[in-house]
Image (cartoon, rainbow, N blue to C red; front, side, top):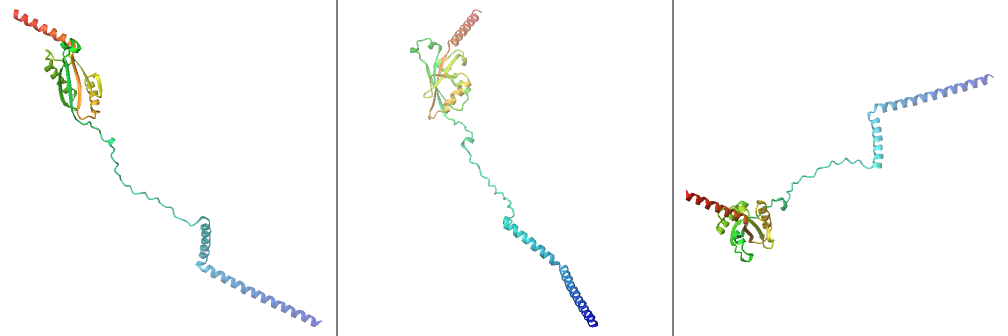
Length: 231
C-alpha cells in the first residue's frame, strides 16, 4: 500500500516537473516574439518598405491595365509668317487713259434748212481736243465754229440743235448733244473704243425759232436806227 502511494507521488512529481518545463519553454518563446516585434518597431524603414512595395504593386497593376502614364502635350502655336497679299488688278483704281479725239462738225444754218435736202450745203469743220476735256470746253469750241461758219447776229447755244454719231459704234441719226449728261454718255462710248484714232461726228442745225428771233431782233435794230435818224 505504501509502495503504491509512493508510486503515485512519483508520478505527480514528474507531471509537475513537465508542466514547469512547458511553461518555461512558452515563456522563452513569448520573450523571443516580443524581441522581434521590438526590432520591427525600432526599424523606421520597415513600414515604409512595405508601403512602397504596396504602392509599386498598385502602379504595376495600373500600368498593365491603362498603359504607362504619359504627360499631356502642351500645344505650341506655329510661328506667324506675314505674307504680303498679292495685289489684284481689280484693287487698283481704273483711270481712263487720256487720248486725242477729233470732232468732225457739220453746221447747217436756218436758211439752208429752208432748201430741199438734196441742196443742203453744210459748213464742215473740225475740233481737236483731249478726251479729258470738260463739256464746257467742247461747247465753247462749237460756238466759235458756228460763229465762223454762219456768222449769226446773236450767238446763243440754245438756238442750235446738236446730235452726234460714231462710226461702227452709234449709227445715224445718233443721240442729242445738248447737256453735260449727253456729253458724259458720249465719252463713255468713246472710252470703250479700241481704235487708235478717235473720231466723233457732230451735226449742228440752226433752229427756225432762232432764225426768227434773229430776224425780229434785226428789224427792231433797224427801226431804232431809223428813229434816231429822224430825230
